[in-house]
Amino acid sequence: MNDTNLMQYLPDYYSGIREFQLIMEVEDKKFDDLKAHMKELYNQMFLDTATTGLSNWEKDTGIQDSNSKDTHEDRRSRIRSKIRGIGKIDEQLIKDVVDSWTNGDVEVTFADGKINIKFNSFYGIPSNMKAVKEAIEQIIPAHLGVKYNIKYLLVKDIHDNRTINELQNTKLNLFEGGVI
Image 1 (cartoon, rainbow, N blue to C red):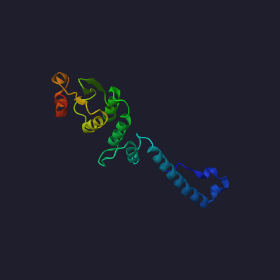
Image 2: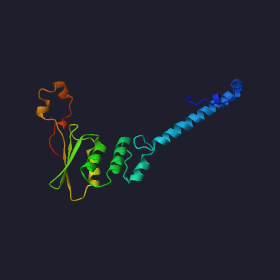
Image 3: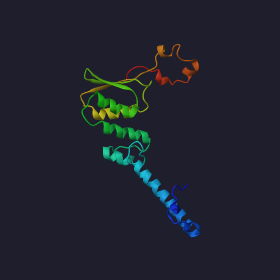
Image 4: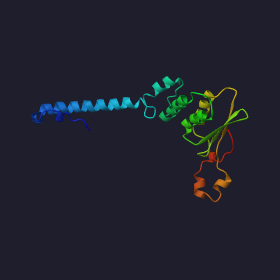
C-alpha cells in the first residue's frame, strides 16, 4: 500500500505519460519504505516501543547479562528498574522499582532493619519474582534484609464466593501460604 503519491506534485501533463507514472510508482514505494524505516528508528528511541534498540538501552543502563530468551517486556522492565533505581533508597524508590516489574499495587515499609514488600493487587507469587528480587538486591544497602509478603487465597476468600468450576480452574499456587 502506497501512502505517497508523488504524481500530485507534477504538472498535469505528466499524468498521461506512462514512463512518468512508472517512475513515480517506484519512487512512491521507496518513500514509503523510507518513512517506515524512519518510524521504526523513532520507536527505538523510546523504551515502551523499543525492540531492536533494547540492547542500546541495556548498554546505557549498564545491564550486561541480557538473556536472549527474555521477552521484550522483561527486558524493558529490567531497564525501567535500573532507571528508577537511582537516588536515595526510600520506600518510594523501592516501590517504583517493584512496580516496574509487577505493574501492581505494592506497599513498602521499613521495620526492624528489614524492608517489607507486600503485594496487594494479585494472588500468588508474581511470575517474575526472581527478577524482582535481583532488582531489589542491586539497589538496597547490604545491611538491610527484605521480606516479601505475598497475597494468597484463603478459605474465607473462596467460601460462598466461588463456584466449584471456578475453583477447579484456579491454580494451586494461589492457595499456598505466607511469606517468601
